[in-house]
Image (cartoon, rainbow, N blue to C red; front, side, top):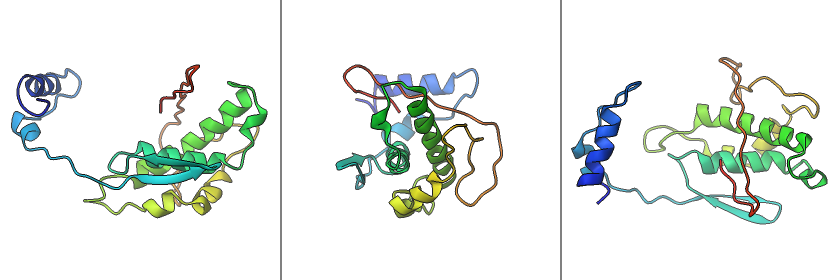
Length: 165
């Protein structure tokens, strides 16, 4: 139903009629799509196993890198929403997203250094960019000089602990 029929036609129409950046997707593009089964990415944070979608999606890899970076900080000493804890989380996000933007993609087409991005050792090196009392400019991906405008992202967690990334 999703790749053929009315829903597919609606998807193609919305993409093609976008007023800012119209796309070129056709019904045949959806009809010919086949899902690719991939092994999930895995990490560990304070005794919890993290299992997430692998590339070409980037959220799971970025999340594991963020958690690896944050593992050295005792966030439990802060109340929920404390500015200091938010600072550390935002800085970890900036670093992980810089690496995501540079290194992640579809591993069928590009080399993705997944083992490195998921490693505790790599995150320990990246963690050194975080200053406890000030925000740093948007960090460059590992090994590169900074460029572009700085950005920040804030994630939301509800009272049941459900978060968005």
